[in-house]
Image 1 (cartoon, rainbow, N blue to C red):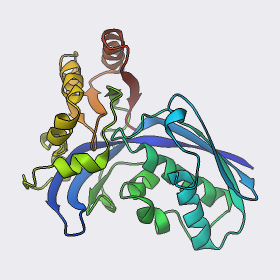
Image 2: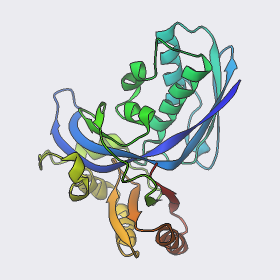
Image 3: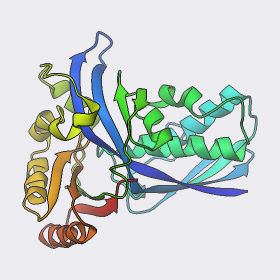
Image 4: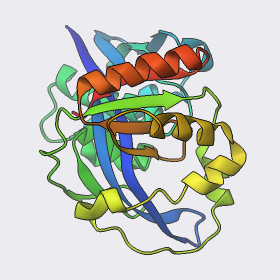
Length: 273
């Protein structure tokens, strides 16, 4: 059996950081959304676990046991008492350390795939997802939801009005690791996030990320000057930024313009799932 799934890119439509906890993690509130586009992951039954990586960002990843795809699959196998393996092939299309959940989305896709491959019924991907990473539970769902805690506590959010909305993702291809961005946060609680008011919200990591990767500011300026933009904002801890558009034609025109002006950037026109 050979199965394939999409590791949908994650967007934080808004992200409010409330406090730094004693364990070093941060309490936050965020509205998650996902795009139609993402990495592609496939799996086949095997006697052991293995991972092959292809695609434009394949050279930046290790195929060893620390890869989140393998860690996730092994965690679910252990929880379910599975003694066979799984052979994965990952088409890595999303940039690394880019604020759109690439690694978490890959891990989530691995959990969904092996649950189907092994026909699991009593043990489910969500049973181990939070142990793999804070964003993995949301990525397992891959649908709009409201996250609290470190992002792992999820509540329903009606994202039906977002489905199909044209969105443009742009990254200056500058790594923006999550740890240093959170460390650079000034510690000021600027207030709670009402899920339904996400457009009036903010991303509290945008300012510290800008300090570490000033190119993010240039990306946001480019997005803001495009026609028919409803909202532009950085996602997660950066450096990927997104813009929501009124029409697919406006999104595609913006993608063409930005690609022409910045040939060294990563630009992906897609839509909200």
